[in-house]
View 1 (cartoon, one colour):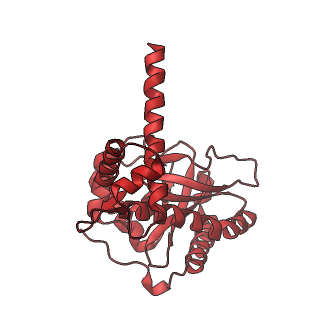
View 2 (view 1 turned 60 degrees about the horizontal axis):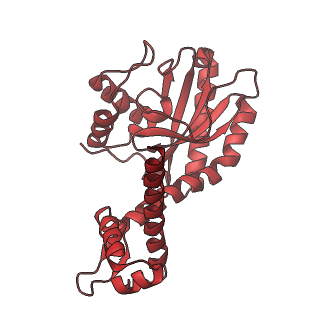
View 3 (view 1 turned 45 degrees about the horizontal axis):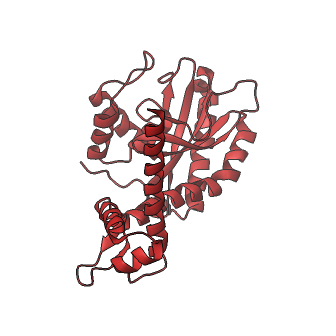
Length: 270
């Protein structure tokens, strides 16, 4: 049984390697290449290459010209590349602002993106206080019960929010977690109006955060920034000062990404 599993795993890895080789080959030709040429360059049989090309085409990674029959790279690769580039551009631009914010407030600061309906942490600056937030770069959390998740969902269309909830659900983590869709939609509308979001012990007891959206060159929300601490963060003047510094930092990052203030806050569709 172990030998069979080993063979299966090796076969799967080889298939992936062959598919990636085909993608690499096609990067050298803007006009595209015929099946025979791709097979020759990859060193694989035409039948094998044809099967791989058909699969890649079905997923949008490869396109076939209806006139010449040549294969070329597909739009899906452009979409993925744009997502990756956008995320890392935000991280690079935001880095000095994040550190400046931590230096000023002494609390933990996060930078996140919304990926596949979840919050993905792409940067973290640790608190200068004794308090330590259990989080790390690369971690994923649900969107409906985090300040950063809600502030990004607030700028999605109603249909996009419904799809996320349909796929991910509204799991309860604490007694404060929003588990009703109507309540969530009302919360998102409020967030969109006020320009920031917060969660008070919605995903973890004793953990609170306030979050603000970051807009890209096109005026679309591409990420979010948050400050995390204990419930004491949400009292009186401390909360107002924290909110002002956070939203100011988010605006500065957005402006550094080329966002014009007039481009933000477009109405979300239904």
